[in-house]
Amino acid sequence: MGHQRYLQILGLISAVIAVQLFTYYTDTGHHLTQLTMSAYYSLVIIGLCLLIGYAGQISLGHAGFFAIGGYISAFLTTHNFLPYKDNYFISFLSKSGLLASREDLYGGQILIFHPWAACIAAVLFAVIVAYLIGGPVLKLKGHYLAMATLGFGIIVYKIVLGTEKFGAADGISDVPSFVLLPGVEITGKLPVRIMNYYVAWVIVIICMIILLNLINSRIGRALRSIHGAEDASNAMGVNTAKYKLNTFVLSAAFASVAGVFLTHYNGGIGPSEASVMKSVRYVAIVAVGGMANLWGALIMGVLLNFLSLRGYFGTYDDAVFGGILILIMLFAPEGLLRIDLFRSLKGMFLKISDSKEKT
Amino acid sequence: MAILEVRDLSRSFGGLQAVFNVSFTVKNGSIKALIGPNGAGKTTLFNLISGFLKPDTGSVLFNNQKIHGLKPYQVAGKGLSRTFQHIKLFHKMTVLENIMIGRHIHSKAEFISGMFNLPWTQREEKAIRERSLEILNFLGLSEMADAEATSLAYGQQRIAELARALACEPKLLLLDEPAAGLNMRETAEMAKLIARIRDMGITVLIVEHDMSLVMNISDEIIVLSYGQKIADDIPLAIQKNSEVIRVYLGEEDA
Image (cartoon, rainbow over all chains, first blue to last red):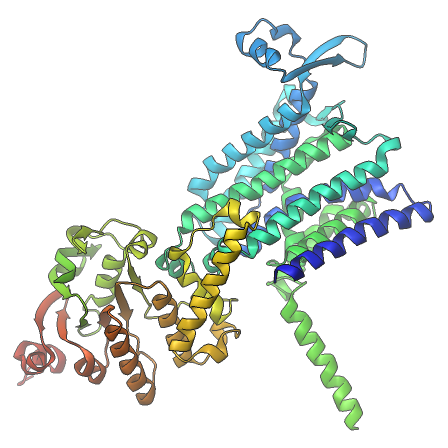
């Protein structure tokens, strides 16, 4: 079991390198930008896959957590805190090295949060929000849970759209690069495009390893048992409420981390990232990926986001994802990329070839 | 010595008094059966004991500790495990994985240790798997270990649910109609199995309609009618109890 997991990860690493080399030799390096963005989006999707596919709890509000991560880190790294320098709290933060000054577009000095501090604050805030709304909301089941999380998503969208400090309909731009380690920064600048592609994929690979370990552990089994028969799971000693909440919070943390990184990569964030259609898109991708299938979610997440970002769906972008969701729910409600489906397809082909041989 | 003590337990749903002032004890190491006509409140009583329902009044003591008001997973943690009248195996999980959930309360890997697949969690997983296979062996289900649990034949699903409850290594096992839907041969096997479980030192409280099963294996029987206890005695005495006969067969001159 364990070896297979690491072979799969090795396969992913080879694929990531192969794609980069391919774009290098075919002179299509500009595709790496969308592949980097898709990598960050797929963080939301694999986190959501854990929640929907494994624990069996739907969320139509994960774009909200993505936006919380992106907006808070964007705000803290662009807003000038210099006027509040004498404020006790701000001066304390400044002294502890959490703030940094830099030049703004016009050459003036501004005091902003260090991206690491902003990142931690953003993810922490998303986690707290997820805990607060997850507690009451996860008592609901099925359609009611879907509606409640949808409501949360709409609230976040309306808040970012209506808040002057968050740039209202324009969003926040001029977000600085995020120096992860000396020499490694998340930024959309062209000279470091290849490095950023690898940074994004290293993050995805780490997150995949963590989630693959989790679903193959005692906790993963308990989550699937909640999906399988919640009452029985509780009677077997599984604290179902706690596990559902922890999973919800974990997936929200993944979404907010994706929001933070992608915002630094793009150099900004707009309200459309918080829109309900984004949440629908994430759920649709988890569904196409096969629901309880992390690899399917990752592959579909990268593929569909890449096509969407390259503009293959044109003005029908949202409609495509809405359509995908409807088709999946009608014809393959348990997801498309499923092992048993492949098996039955294989069985069908084998039967066909068998009968051909006989005749 | 009583392992379970139910005192003056009552619960109503709207205007319906499902369980009214029921008191009884279950002796350690015995098999006690709970019988009664449909709607007598047997399953409600089970749900009150296992934490799925909260009583309006009264108390439930397990090993002299009160357990009413606890959540089902907390009750399970105390060493009280149950099966369901309508089989509730975990969908999309193999038989072995179903049994492995039974080991949940005896293992401790949490989110963080699971995410990093720490060496001790790997050892724990191995122990969970081995113990679960042992239990499948004991119940003769080991060939089905990798089959999807809900794809088993009905009788085997009953056994699998029993295996899952046994994997918890409970002190008290609550069986809700374990022979429902089983044919005569399967029922006889189930009876043997329950007796073997008792011989392992596990106390059994069983709700059952099948009289032959109940009379054969029970040490004591409680009879419920309209939510009230009307008899609590050894099987022979229950068979002769005129009140019980009246409830089951109707008035002589009716």
